[in-house]
Length: 146
Image 1: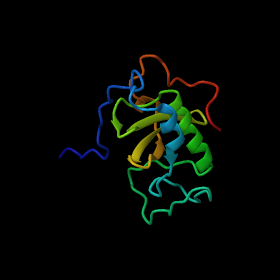
Image 2: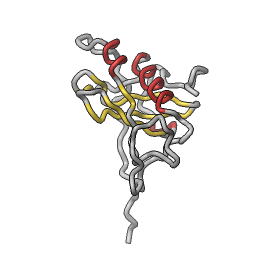
Image 3: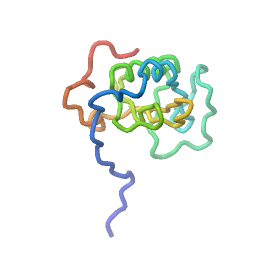
Image 4: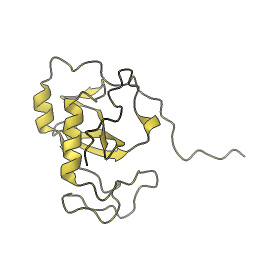
């Protein structure tokens, strides 16, 4: 009997947005976007800068976030990635559904979890999970957040 795959395979999306939508003010999105995190992804101990409760049971398929990354570092990485246009072409309200960036050289993806407030959660991913990036915008630079 064939064993059931543990993880769902997701096809890569169309990639990074080619350009920012003209009807949406990028500066407003940058200033309102907030990294709020998720207790499902936090390895213990959770840094005091987070305002999330650790989940009683971590999701078995959830990536573990590095406990050394503070909320402020994650927030800065999120906003810088939006400013650089590392966003999906899909928007929900004024906010991009996905944002990709790097923290300590490791790629991360953020997903919008509240389109009215601009709240995101994020988790580390591997290089092959990055979206299609024909322009090389997501290549490691020297200015990754530490």
